Structure formats: C-alpha cells, structure tokens
Length: 578
Image 1: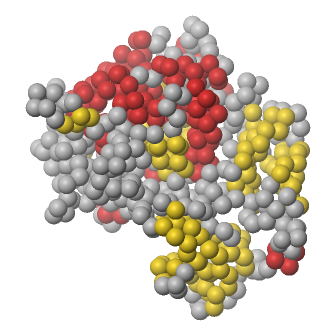
Image 2: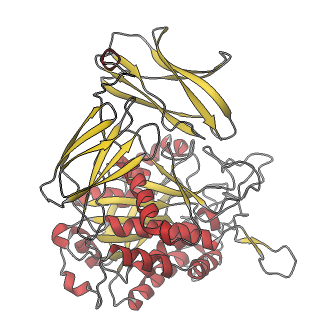
C-alpha cells in the first residue's frame, strides 16, 4: 500500500509517463483486443449457471493454497521494486519469475486456458530509471465479439521505511503478499470456468514507489482502447489485528481483532461508477455467497476512495475513467508513518507471517488469518464472475416520486425482461434493491421525503445482474410532510449519507440557480455550538457534494450547516456512531 500518495504527486518525476509497453507473450495483447478464436481456449465442460459457479468458487478457494503462496513470498526477503532481478532466490526478479511459473502451472492444470505474460515497460521511478514488469494471467472470454475485460489485481512489491532501501528484509506479508496470493488463487480456481468477458489476474510492481505498475496497465488499456469494465484491487487484505496507529477510517485500537469485516473503498458518491461497482460487489456477495457461507462477512462500502492521505492501485484506473475499487482488511497494523515510538508492522521488517510464542522456531501465532483471506477471495471471485457475464445495462430510465411511491420506466434495447431497481437515501450502500419482472415499468414503495437516488440493472435468463447504471436523483417530491414550496427552494441541504456513520460521510445540497457569492462552506458544530470543522465548497448548479472524514473514536450528535457569505442557508443534524 502506497505510503502518502500526496508525497509522490509532489515529486517532479512522478509525472514522467511509462514508455515502451510490451506484452512479452504476443497473444496477450490480441486477446485483450478481442482478436482471437474462443474455441482455442474453450473448456471441455462449460459451466454457465451463476449459482453453480458461485458455489464452486466458494468451495474450491482454499486457505491452504493461500498460505502456501504467502510462505513462498516470505522467502524472497525483499520484493522492493528496485531490488535484485538476477538472483534465483531473493529480490523482485526471483519473486516475479515465481509468480509467472505459478500462473503457467495453473494454466497446465486447467486445459491450457490461461495466457501468461509480463507487461514490460520503462519508467523513471522515485529510485531511478528502470525496466519493470507486471505479471499477468489472462483468461480469454467466450465471446470476443462482445469484448470486455475484468481486472483483479494486487501489488507484489514490498518495502521498509526508506523507500529505496533494497537491502533491508521486507517480507511484506500483510502489505501485500496477501493481495498477491488472493489474485493467484483466483487465477487457479476461476480458470476452470467459462465467462463471456476476459478476466485478467495481475500482480503489479511499483505500488510503493507511486502506483506506477498499475498506472502502466491503465495507460496501456487507454492507449490500446481495451474495454476495461471493472477493476478489483486487493491491498492489505488478510490481516485481522489492529495496530496502535492506522490511517482513518480506521480500526478501534491496538490488538483489536476483526476477521469478519472487509472494507470496500472507491471514489465519489452520487452517480459514481466506482461506488456503483462497490455496491454491486456487496449485492452479489449478499445474494450468491452469504446463503452458503459458514462464516458471514460484513462487507462495508466505505465513503472515501482510500484511507486518509493514502492511495492504492485502483486510483490510476479511476483517473482514466475505468470503474475501480479497493478491498482492504477491516483492521490494519499501522499507518506507515515511521516516527519515533512507531511500533506497528506496516512498512517495516516486522511485516512477517506471525510470531513464535513458544520458542520452538516455528510460527504459531499468525498475523494473517488464511480463512479470512479465503473469504475475501471468494467475495472477489464471485463479483468478477458475475461482472464477466457482461449482461447489458439498460440504456436509460426515469423515476418519478409521488408521496411514498416511485414510478420507474426503463429503456432497454436488449430486452432482458428482468431488471433490478436500486434505491439509496442516507446510506453509502443501496437501501433497497427491487426486482421488476416481465415489464419495463413499475411502481415501488420509497421514502416520501428527502434525497432519493435511483439506478437500474438488467438481468439475464439465468438470474445474473449487469453492472448497474449511473444514478439519477429523483427530485420531484410531493407530500404532506414536504410540500411543493420546500421542493422548489433554490438551495436545499440534504441529510448526510451515511447517517449514522462511523468514519466518513457525504454532505450534499442542491442548487437550482447559483447565487453570486464570495465564499461558501459547510460548518460542523457540536450541540454546544463548538466548531468542529469548516469545509470550503464551490457552488455549482445541481447536486453538490463534499466528504467529511473524522476517523474513529467519536460519538454523539452534531449539526452541520451550509453557510454562504456568512449567512446560514440550511441546517441539519448528523450522528457519529462508532
């Protein structure tokens, strides 16, 4: 996980683009472009039923396999991006060759259906000019005529406190052998199944030096017009122990254990394709995996794109308008700010598999929970499997609210015949997802007042959803509790979302016509009137949003107001509840 992303952005060489892109296996690029014969990669037994695939993924993803990959990664001593590339046993070169060979092994186990390649490129990084390689295993889709690509990624590189120190031991177990192991296990298991779209399993490098391995593939996809539909990034995804420090939104405190929650970070709020992807992932878990799960998981759709001041490999894709999100453990051991008194493991030589508590020379207390990591892998795999079906998303829709009823009309040239209708009010997640069958119009119950956000998806004949559309704000409100005069106000402050909330929340307001003004801000105070925060905002027509993050450990009711040129325009209350 990249240390403080802002530091990288301030460096002049960060802006230097990667060059000389090359897929070392020429077939790889043609598959990504959709130029191949799918019969050459067909499985002898084709399973397309989404329920059967979900059940198979849930049963076949193995904690022992994940453990074996992580144990091997610990033997390379360091996987710093700029470490030794020639040694057969230590450094990034040995690590990436081992991942490549494992991908080839999975290919041999699954009827030679994977295409294994490096993405090679040149880059001037923080630690000098070099040639670098991401490692990819590509599972060609069954329908190249309807070409689309799903990416599951995790960064292979590790680091100590000093960014370019290639001599220190940096096993990087939680950060990020766990993410790489997850990607590898998905390549092993998912390559037995057939999907309409192509799935790429990628271990990136250069994450710790500024996300440049992920950026290389994002630029490559942009330049080659590769139809990348969804990016699932996994970073710090297997640890369960909270450190003394961690970047907010954070975990409760030192040695807290959480092996049943996972955080989904993504950019934006209203009409964000990235948040919609995160919500889709949670929905697919809840409907396909949870009913058969031995240990239920709390899948948390987070408000911010990442932890405060931090960044990950999903960001270069989001910056290029590819839908992208990040999986991260609920608990994280440190914030990577190495200062006197720092005792956490992240970005130190202490980021290891576990501790030998009885002195017999063997680890007997693990910092990584392999069952927890396997459950997170299943969530990834199930979402990627449904997304890779490439069900058409309806091209348009409308929604009109009258009191407590919402009338929806869907435009769908593909005529899938079944649709999902998602409603959202004061939460980061959808409040309700309805199913509409045999019609493109329907009426559904809804909140009679307040902001209401609507999006839709198509459903195929086997019950699998498309990725959801962008959101629309249903702004027509007619009810006894919120009369027409309220709806017609020029500026309206909405209830924050989510509310109550634990770490961060979106505050939004609607403007019909932007007034002439000098300054505007959201002011947050406690109930005694003490100023807590003041967030500058730039007014624009339509929906305005700002993210407020307070981190962990605050409880109570607070007031927030939109203030324009010293005048309070509107006020509401919000609840801190962690």
